[in-house]
Image: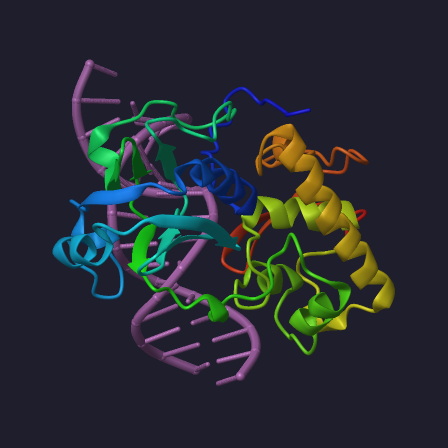
Length: 271
DNA sequence: ATTGTGGCCTGCCCGC
DNA sequence: TGCGGGCAGGCCACAA
């Protein structure tokens, strides 16, 4: 059940669960042909891409599939691969419809001035990436291999490799998309809270038992929060504010900056 | 190579 | 009622 806290206006942050929903919705576009590209915001185009270059590269090509690796959404065509990143506030409109709806927080309004990238399709339809804060981006032929294994499919062995020898905090390792791809701040706080692990403990210091707890919590959180409706529906979410109490044991939560991110954790049961 | 820090960007909340 | 400051966080450049 989603926790709704009046006054909390955490925006809908696209972590892997939201990007996966975008992917599922975009699958409906497979088979259509790109007839025009609209990229009005040069900032949004990465790695030297320009509006005219994107148009030249994509026009007349057919969409053949959609893949996801972590938070990176990949459009396969019979020409180039297009990579879409959503940053913190990016949303995808598929034929004018927002696939991620019912989000409890954040602005519901939309604004055409936030449309950073669009594809016009034949015989009909469109794809639009809307991003108020412009922290996302679009690039051609993204390097997918710099990303670690996807968090939804990570194996015990891969998790062990991702954490091995890490001297930084556990949370920073889980946020590092090179190690494991897909987890953002909210999901990591929820996972570590459920696993009973202190986000500040060294990533490389986990024994087999702790790694097992972590992997189980990761899988369970991803499955449950997806069923509930997204990354912001965790049990910790409602308490993730100054003065919040641990929903498990009532202890005042600790608020710290770890891995450069605002971090809430329970000093009593996260060790 | 690994780890840490700051900046990008802008909507929104809060206090005055 | 308006305004300024701080905050949010994914990602990247850069420093140590």
